[in-house]
Length: 102
Image (cartoon, rainbow, N blue to C red):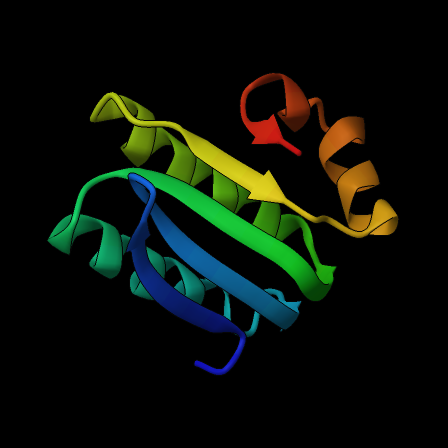
C-alpha cells in the first residue's frame, strides 16, 4: 500500500509515514499493515502525517482501533505533522483527548 510506509522502530517507537488518501476504500489495508508491523515489534506507534491529504470517518475509526490495541499493551500512539484540515477532524470528534497529536 503506497499510502503507508513502515519505517521500523526508531527511538523506541514504530515509525509509520502516511501519505495521500486513506478512506473507506483502503482503511482495512491500512489497519492490516500497521497492526501487522506492530505485532512483529510491539512498541509505541508514531505516525508522521505530513503528506497525508485526506481521511474520512472510517479512517478515524481505524486510528481508534489501532490506539485500543496499542494502549492495551501499555504503549502510546502519536500522530504528528497533521495538516490543519485533518487535525480539525480529530478535534471535532474529541479524539485529541485520547491520543497524542503533535
